Amino acid sequence: MAYKKGEDRRQKVFFPDCIDEYVEGDAPVRLFDAFVDSLNMTALGFVRSVPKYTGYTGL
Image (cartoon, rainbow, N blue to C red; front, top):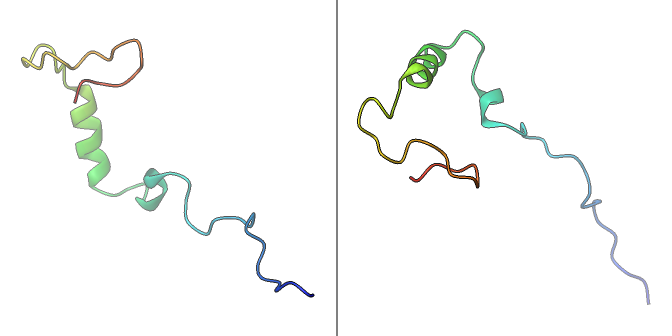
């Protein structure tokens, strides 16, 4: 009995590996991203802003 042959499932993905690759290098959203990254969340009163030993924030 012959098996059906299809496409190789180990083929490459056609989408970027990272969401950041969807955004243009000079897109305005990169400015907002840099601004938010520069904020001191602890000073703003967020108590779970420091990552635990697992590396995840307490969100």
